[in-house]
Length: 605
Image (tube, rainbow, N blue to C red; front, side, top):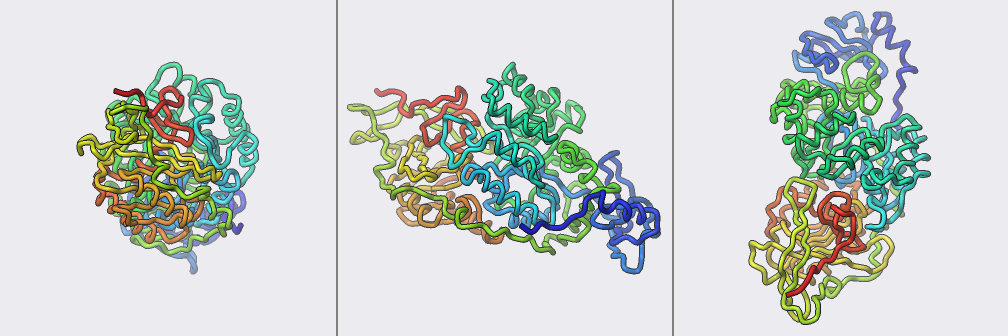
């Protein structure tokens, strides 16, 4: 692994002091901009920034004493100088990209620091997969910190993953150079019930002096929530309403409010600051999950900050939530998150604080993007064969693998149905009366407004040949179609959703052929394919190419009748057995309100 070299403050402190005092010349001076100070919540006009060794040496009204014959001068021309944006919680794999290509996609949007949890690849390749992500992250020209995944599987006993993560793995990873803490503790029932393994992982992280990420995906704010807070998680991003945000910050946690490709949880929670007037220091903006199309076409953390401002947040407060608040939370306030001496020189020049056009991006003292175009290389890790051979179906699937048998003699059945909720991660546990034909439960004769089709989880880690079947509602599909994906949070088997069993088999087998990705079939013809050869989760192709294929996939879903916003993200989370109410796993249908397996067929009439 070849890391991008970057000096610590201790290595360069003598030169920073000399530059600030005027005894040495700066490498770069940004001249005559409006300094957005996120420590004091001020905007100070006519200020200069002097940079040396990739760090800020001086910020003040006149840096002429820091200028030498070889100093690069960047004219701010009155533009706002804001800190590089930080994403406090995210999963690179959700972008369908490797760390290098993800960085290439978000740098022009002003993201210079990311706090990533690679628990997707951990479920497929274990600790070695985490190491691969960690190593490529350290090669990038921006700051990508890795949280060691905590939950693989996310809910023991309810799913089977390719690999498992335990306390020994966590303790080992805490010594890696880029590990910043523990990834989101999704097994909140385990913490609430005093699981020795979960508490041991948290203890190993706290012993290392690092931050424990949270994930409390329950509306219950009673004793269970308080027990979870007592278990040690320092933040949580699963809140969906104002009461959730308030409860978390009152208990000493940071409320992470997310705007991803499909999660719109900022508007409903930021009122805790904008209307209730709570101290904004404990609120953080993040994305959680953004696919490549969102990154290329809409933005990254700049999109989140703009959205927070549009929801009524003061622009500088919104910036604090995406810079200094995040850095402070992870113990990095002295290293990044603000434009102040000693910090990494991560600076954005923008002409407007509300619409936030990202005109000039500087990371570690170097210009990395200008007017939406990246100006640096993002080095790639060598991904070995083991990372590219992860779709092991065992055997080809046929239509019969997706048949759901009805009880003998039944004319119809009462079935449990997963109900997709647009723009939110939780699902609804629905019940629907479904017809039976020739002994099989069917969905093709239902009226269009009923909107129920089949869902299957196809095992792909151990080549068992197993298929779990169920029903899902909310996508609006019609005609004969199927969509399959090896991105299936968090176990990452294969999810197939369709209206036709033959098309479901074709889609599943196609992903076995290409080694993973997403495909859409209509009338037995493939109409979209996104190849994701690395762990069945990511591509190392350029983000623009992956985004184009992802857009073709979205268009194909619409051709099949789906009108949900970012329906692919909803599709990929249907196996996430730690978010209520109903999910599917390789072991069966999971009631996430009780954390128990439940029957697909509830009865007969």
